Amino acid sequence: MNASGKFEVTLSTVNTHATGVNGNNLGRMTIDKIFHGELAAESKGEMLSAMTSVKGSAGYVAIEQVSGSLQGKQGTFVLQHFGTMNDGEDRLILEVVPNSGTGELVGLSGQMNIRVDNGQHYYEFEYSL
Image 1 (cartoon, helix red, strand yellow):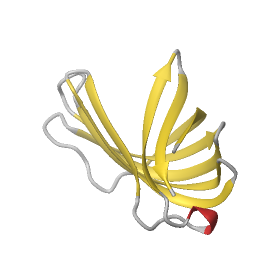
Image 2 (tube, helix red, strand yellow; image 1 turned 90 degrees about the vertical axis):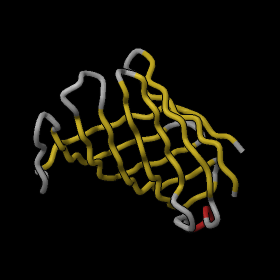
Image 3 (cartoon, rainbow, N blue to C red; image 1 turned 90 degrees about the horizontal axis):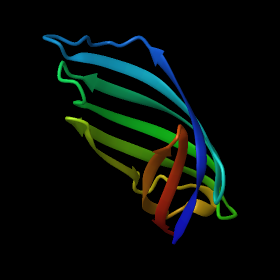
Image 4 (cartoon, rainbow, N blue to C red; image 1 turned 30 degrees about the horizontal axis):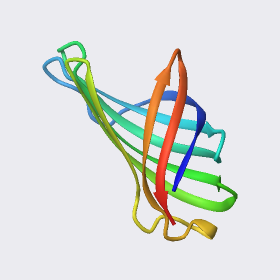
């Protein structure tokens, strides 16, 4: 099954436990999202990032708890992020954490793709339930 729509995201910097060395800067942020469309939900999460001294090369991981409805089914689930950027070429993987679905979303699995166009964020969610 597929769901798509738009979302807004707010990132806020928080203190990090670790610091970068030799031109690698580590960061930590909170994530707040509001999803519109076939996924009508809110999420909260945390992100860890690493920016290298090479422009366009970085990495991040994140976990976010999503709560709302997916094509009319109510519940929650957790999305796990893994992203890298190599000389400006990015690779992003967002997957539902196995067995994280609750309510009518028990058994949810899938992957989400994110696209940004003129500052607007869009999602495409391919999932099974």
